[in-house]
Length: 303
Image (cartoon, rainbow, N blue to C red):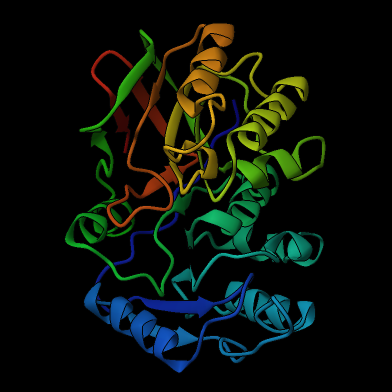
């Protein structure tokens, strides 16, 4: 297993670039909140030139978004990169990213949802730890802020025991943590930008997807051989699932789909971890080593 490097901690005074690789911000108030969040963390925010740009459902043209990202990667005074929001569009930038700059000087990349495209590409091309974390424009709760600080500033365990965890398959396992948003993981399957799932603990979350679509994307990953040698699965939040409403007319439940996956794989597996589209969410260092205790509902991140 190749050695994965951890970026330096983001301590007080760290300069953090605020970039929008995916969807556009609603307006200046979103950027103001992102800058306030960075300052609350003790960081100096550095908004990208195109942070407020808009081109349809993108935060500016592909070139604008790519230029902001690459400028941050090349800038040796920038200590971290915090993505402003998710949406769609990061996958369109993967072929043009300056991975050599990140290999030369690792720095924290933070975000989730569509940012999974960046996490996966960095994992496959750079072998640098990135952070599945709240986006910069989010309204950070004390829970989320504490986990983010532990992950990127203190370098301590940012996860723990999930209060609402359900054990889908028992056992304890150890491996490198990878994964993220299910739609992006399925979209990247079979490409050169998919993460390495071998002996990995895979975290999976999504939002606004119906049960049959979740099932299809999980099947896509299984058929792409992503699960065949994985060490364990951590299902996070599946938020706003339409057919989980009380009037679903007897549609198959999400729990049944997740349990079927766990029964097929027979590796330690939990559901209900605070990962994904939630107010209170863990920051998960992707690429770091971790231990999953499915019986206790606990994910432990190693330094």
